[in-house]
Image (cartoon, rainbow, N blue to C red; front, side, top):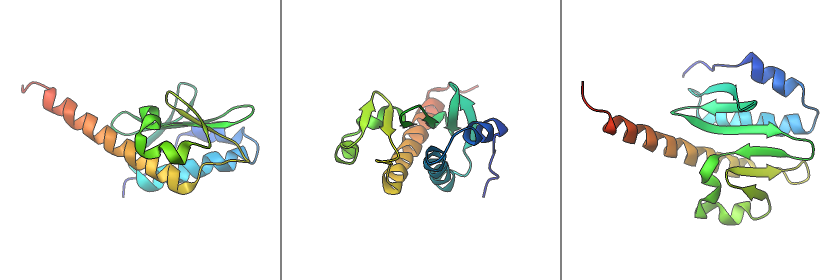
Length: 131
């Protein structure tokens, strides 16, 4: 198993968040690590970000909600029913302490993102000219 690349910047970000938001974000973090232990966790765009074959997912705390950023996966038809109770936009799912994201939904999204990134990486590799 790959060694986790734990960022002190992410640790500092999470340490500055009050409960229950911190626990909700820590849950996302734990699930992503469990599915992608080789991912790198960094601060990108000012928020915690997992990278594996490009940006995988981001997560963040805001004044009245938390957000999970899985990119275009939000628009995946297979997630439509599960996301109906959440405010979503182009690449974001907003959730609150009263309406947190279920673990199974987070897992499903991360698995989808892992597959999307693998496919993109494979396509880029095929396009590179031989040296």
